[in-house]
Picture 1 (cartoon, helix red, strand yellow):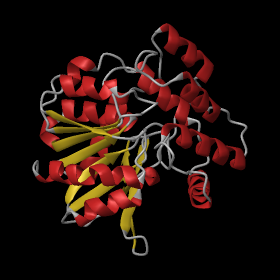
Picture 2 (cartoon, helix red, strand yellow):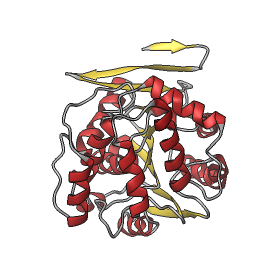
Picture 3 (spheres, one colour):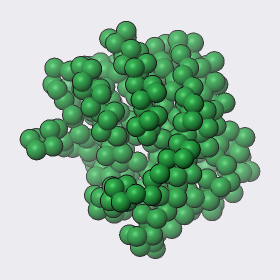
Picture 4 (cartoon, one colour):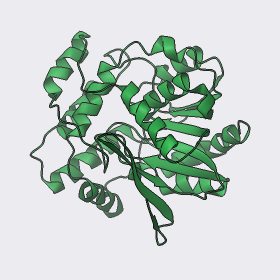
Length: 305
């Protein structure tokens, strides 16, 4: 672990066997820990600073990390193809994956053990929500509360998953020969499509942020393996129906990646849950979107400490 006084956080690796999970602990040390679990293809740096700051100001200690196969965490070696998984997805054929979401949940437990955190809150975004569901189902004694943002409990399929247009944009990310500028362009196209309606992502600031993410971790092959893990982890519903941890479900009413009906399904299945549908929210947490639910998020955390 090392401390960056300039940036105001600690970061380092949690290690077990041949696996290394890179994390960033925003502190303060006496704050109430809250684990942030990022979604498909996202690095820990994707958590917006206005969200991190709001949590810290409210007395919490945000801890974000790179999921396996992303950012600075350990990479795996299998080479699934988007086309093959795409066809199996539409034909509802089981997909084999090098690891499952359950393994990714075990990574989070390893990190908490490394940081000597016995109990905390957890916030999961998209795929991170799926991972967090397994976490709180398997380890209810480790968590005060669960917050699910833009996620689902079922395995994605053509009836509940992304539109064809979004799938085509995701397919672009699987191309390995793209230049740095092409990768920035396709990131702008993707977030413009899945984000808040009318929000301008094609700015110099955002393009610079995407470039910095590429520079931080140029290897993007883990995206396909993480997608295979999502599609290859089936039969989560029985486990999730046993979740007793107080749960807040936050979902956008125009989410084109994970359809809003998935939020209602989660709310119905997790008995101790509250559903917060956010008007004009897509699949991302832009600042105007965060401002719509930040108070309810903090209230949820506060009453479940």
